[in-house]
Length: 167
Image 1: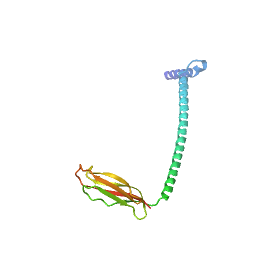
Image 2: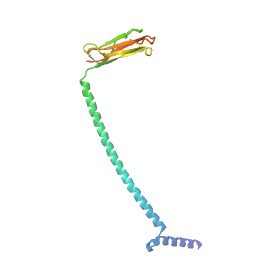
Image 3: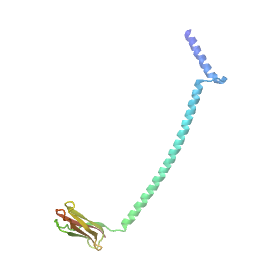
Image 4: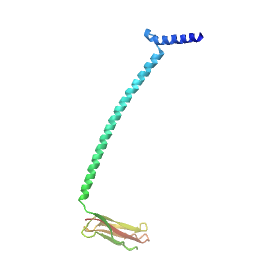
């Protein structure tokens, strides 16, 4: 009998809680549900805006990638066209000078009818044993280097000229 009375009391409380809004009274259950629904609707609206921004950013990124791909294709095409206008590029070393403490000249020649497109030198020996005074093309088919001994450093050194040639 006690359990029936308890059950009847719980049912009465629930009935009053659910019917209270109908008669103008406040209901904690319904006001919590309304608050939760409002919060969920606001969160959904923010998520939709974020999704729209993400889609716009992806569209922009896709366009940038397409532009970069097109630029790379143009650069590759230009490189192919430039390479087709030139012959074979080779690099030749001249003979190494003797390793001593004298001033030296080194020349590297292009083979056959090839022409010099650039050049340089390799200086070996003790640190600061020598310095290069001249380094330039020698006509159209060679590279010239003039190196001088640094008399304040007592060390043997040598110089080798090199040249890039194109056919």
